[in-house]
Length: 401
Picture 1 (cartoon, one colour):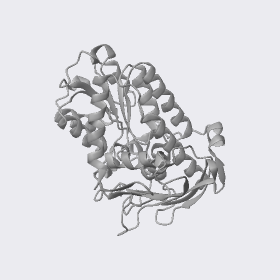
Picture 2 (cartoon, helix red, strand yellow):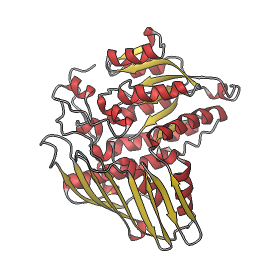
Picture 3 (cartoon, one colour):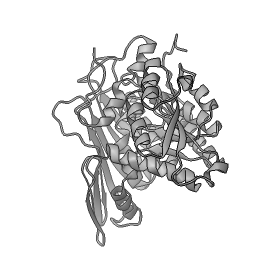
Picture 4 (cartoon, one colour):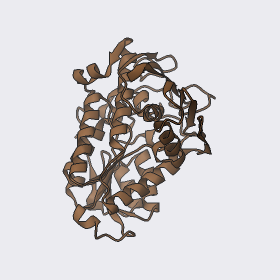
């Protein structure tokens, strides 16, 4: 059975084709950063050499600013494919669940983490503690404890003068930055209501594999590894919405289920209402596996003096009493990553350790987890209680080493 989502709409879907580990970059020591030539290549390592990892490795290499010197993946075939393509010494291709540790112990400047989301907190925290700069895929975690681990790792990176970047593409786009910045300056007045949605025709209708090792290779339908699609995929639209709102949710009420997907799989739809400070409401829906629907990653906010309407695949629109923005952004899947790759390099060379992507990424990730748990329980759930509960998802890795 093919348990992988359709790859037609976004290249990112290749990431879901069965990667088992995250892509990791090494970082330059602060003492080397300031003396480095602006054109010098950083030595990096990739943790997670599957679909998304191998795809993004090509973009890092094409930038001309990085040299891959190490790779790690649970599966030998995955790391070998990446290693052969990027001329990584066979002795620096690490496998198994602990392969990332050997990579982090080796000489390199930065790591790119592209493993299944369950592993992101563990790998990112270890990379920071190993003195590496970190380029981390979204989502940063599958549960609240994992989100807090990443938040603390980001703080440690800043204190230790290390760069930590989370790869959301919309926040890398100049038109999104301009329009959301205007909202924060009051261009559309006080927010009245926000809505966000993510319909996708892909996603498939499979079941999670039974054997632990196969779950690592085909992890998308494995709840503890992916966090369900509201966390793994639909976080994109929640990230835009929470970026616009610029606040943590107070509570969520939700519902969802499996209508197109079989029992035992992850959900195929969610409908969640979030409450934010000052009685601001966010209405959010996401659905997968419905043929022929239009794919969108969208958020729309209404203010007392105007609105903002943005879509990952199309346009950025803002109309206010004294400001207006209308721009085409096309598909940000590749262009947003290219910007992040270049800005990661510049931050390392310039000694910019503000790491501004960490806090908003943790916020949107907690928002997604809150929505999932509210929908699973079909009740109202506060963010404070979610964090206090400390519920952690754990996959079955029996026999994997």
